[in-house]
Length: 241
Image 1 (cartoon, rainbow, N blue to C red):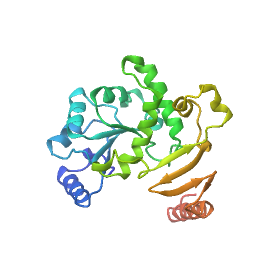
Image 2: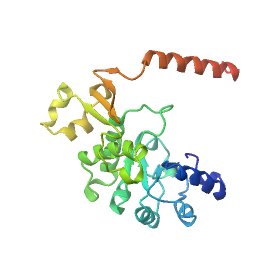
Image 3: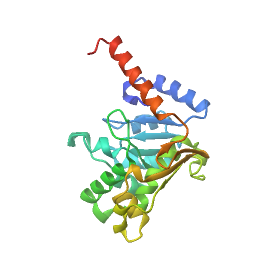
């Protein structure tokens, strides 16, 4: 579920979330604007199967609630960093300091490039600019945040910390010239220099989806053709020229 909880009566939210939980599905809620955490907690809706997105306006009390309920928060640094100051700040440091489970995400690919390397760099730079070493953030921890995203979305609450092969694993090439300046430090190379083109292999649930610069489980050209046809059809129906 993605719409904001403040946009719907709680009885509807409870019914929707109850249906998802009956099926064993994880729940994702975007929290742009005033934080709904206390309202959701008072309604008994928070739990380890809930992932919130956009930690911008949480209070210390709300972060303690999230820790106690095992609810995770995902930050989408590319989109969040474009928002005005009035929207709040990316509270990665506050969440880490409070012991809340955190991941990193893109939000939606209709407006932002789906580049986790760019996301890690933005998140790291903003953290250093605003917080520095008061709440330490290593490049290794950043890579873990990016990997946690796949597990938090695809895995059930009981096996989120299980073998990451189940959710997915990326294998960046290690011999790119632009990564040589890191002195053999792999996490520094990934965060500071890596690009999507450096990813050699992507495996999800034991299936190889990408290898040697090519998709292996779909016809990429056909997907692009169908997307273009669908967009053209929508424009025609909407009389949008």
